Image (cartoon, rainbow over all chains, first blue to last red; front, side, top):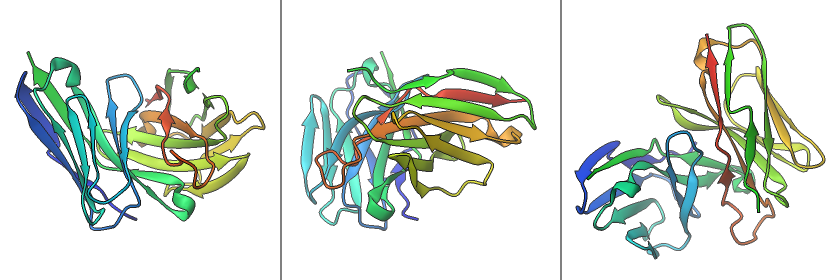
Length: 112
Length: 117
């Protein structure tokens, strides 16, 4: 089973600060996805990165896929309280890549 | 386009009972996957159904089972409930067409919170 390790597991910062969340594996993934989950809801897909070295931006969020496709990072610039949530990275595994394996998640709290 | 819906949203059962959870995927999506989410283990894959057939299964005991109907709606069943089965059960749907754009992108429902007493 391929494993994804996220760090940090918990992060609490002040509004306006920058932060980076990491997702690492010893295995190569064909793609990686980032989700955000809020209390009482299911995860919502933010982005999929497919090509090694790829960088994608979603407003103040920047996602990068490592050159070797074994790791990814999520950088948030000028964090806002609305960014609070559980951030999960996930990658496809199994025959036909039918299932997603998830990292443990990073619980992010942005304090006003 | 309506999202993935799950019923019920909350459920309380006692040990030894069984439970059935329901999931309606996004219209046009033929693949439905089930995940268990707990604070200790995170999100873990249970199984995936495509066109009424189970395509993949995670490492869960046989007490966990599922099925999919011809309209792509899916149910999962847990028999002989244990305290450790308390979790958020998430259903996710995707188009399921291999190789197509967004093949691996899954859309999750809000989950069913199961508490076993």
